[in-house]
Image (cartoon, rainbow over all chains, first blue to last red; front, side, top):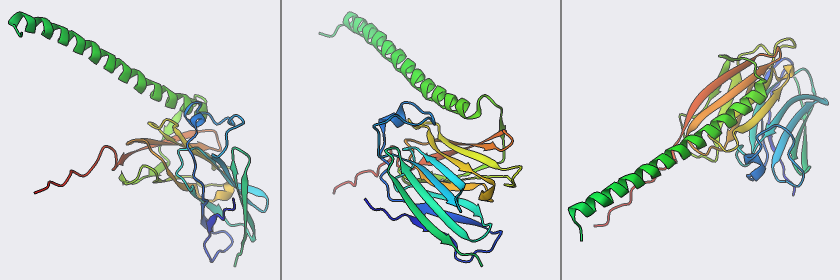
Length: 112
Length: 162
């Protein structure tokens, strides 16, 4: 399944700006029975799949933001967050399911 | 045949039955309410590790009336300078009445620049949403806000035929 995430970054960026980055990925976020029973941040047991669990964002290989999802997040999860631009570089977005399936997306950040 | 005595007898039985039914209903309601409440409390305890929850600094914006329970937008912003020495580490969003009360956790860094995140959540009913922020110095702040669902038990009356 190939999924192209949608990522929105402002056009004109200067060093020192705090920008809002909006992300959206197509995913059904099915409700899982394990989400109803143990409500802990511990990793879920093997054998369950299909729940999107993590969004990790890195800038020049340094982690800047991370989200842990549950099935209480709507289908096609939309997340927006802020980022202070320190210079030009590459943003990396990584979505991971419990099953291990992952989607990676990279975006060059142009700074004027 | 309905006699006065029979009515009295039956009436007594029905009153007894009703009271038993009611007491059962009340106790079941109480226990179910307590279980979700304690569930939420254990989650909060897990997050804060019994540290004090301070009021303020957390702003939770939600619609006054949510039109769809499948996608209720929310935005959490925390009053913080977001410097290397003082920043927001984590933001936890909890729904008090959902079967899975944890909605999402956001992990921030000083590079975030601004402690503000937004997303969309599923809600089972009208309820209070809780946001807990963990600061880099180990203190915790809590913010709450109520959200009403428009679709809950609501339908248009049927049009009358003439």
